[in-house]
Length: 190
Image (cartoon, rainbow, N blue to C red; front, side, top):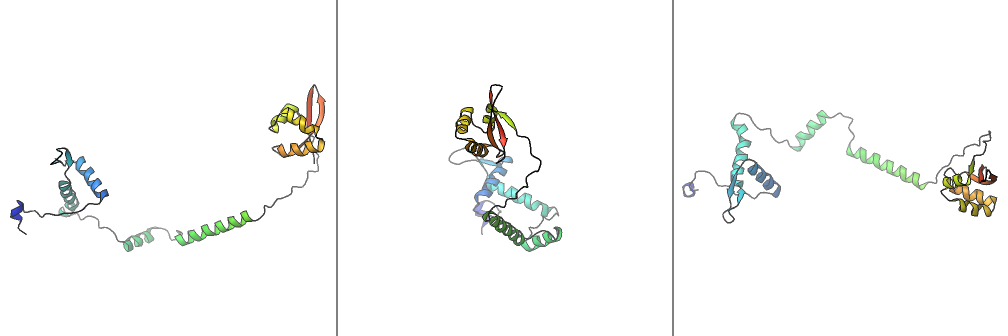
């Protein structure tokens, strides 16, 4: 090739840059003041050609100064280094997948089987009943006093079952009577 016609003895190179490399090269140019004015727009633009020369000069300067750049490792070399440095008890991907699959299978079988309940033997010592005013019991059952009165009018057995279903501890209640101008309720065993 005749370089004299181009006005330089330097080799001309044409390259198509992927977007991510172009973006990094543009940033490098702007950070280092490598810019030019656009022919049509007159606006300042990054001088990508000059930027490439500078990047190559930096890359190869280590080689020119006697320092060789660290070579890029291939896959086999990298695996050898990893296997030498990591402890031998690191689980493999296959082992981890097997463990996860076994845990999922066990969890599914537990979810599919009926729940097992353990019956707690009754305490031989009989507890004294808890006694509450109507307003306090209504709060405990997340209800209101008029609803308590309405269910109590349906009968003692109905009220006991209804209150047990509403109680946060599944405790059954019964109407005790009026004490100090307040309707009183107490716990019962069903």
